[in-house]
Length: 330
Image (cartoon, rainbow, N blue to C red; front, side, top):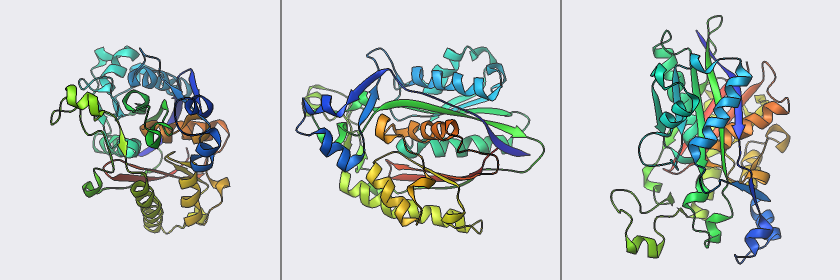
């Protein structure tokens, strides 16, 4: 039995927020943001819009492109770090929006922040391989709305993020043994580098938390940079070596869209030109768990995912966590 990606979809909100708009309320400028991050604009959810809404629309597009009817979905795994609410899982909300709750297929979330989509892919494939008769078509969604948890007065964080969703459908194929190969890891010693300090059960929201804005996103930029530029090339090299490959054997690298300058640095470390990657950070910002499927959808729309193409995905972020996935296109 083989596993292939049979469909890809994505969705972004309508509202655009440009660097020029941000510079009216922050001590920054369009030129500074572009030079340091590559970001020109990002999309923000409406007040009544949440990750399940974005994920639902991405899932619909994914299923339409795959030719698989929603009633055939056997499992839903969602990567999300900014859920609509603490309970239930965003996956259950998407299942209900799709109108397939009566099928009672399992639906659950994975939270590994910006590495979450690769983790979710691994979980999905593992369940398909373990129970092939039960899980034939699995919907894997990455969706986040970081705009809802940002301190919009903190220019160290709010300039980076945008809201979006992306989805892929993994389908069983009886005629080959193709699989996605993974390398995952986490180092909890770096847990404070990327976090929302309060708002959970250890430090519930109270007047003090609100006053200090401790329920908003926090990031130690320099430490995250050092972690990413050291870890990502190492993990990619290691996963390729397990299969007798080198970076030059890759047709496409799809990285988490954290910062264009970071992506350029990582591609340089791999001794690959920027022609071997696709980026969405310029127009959508860092979309967290959505960034890899969103960028994968762009690659597909550009005809970059031709049959036989060898593709590397790599997500990295809070935890600190990382995940790489090596796949051959369908």
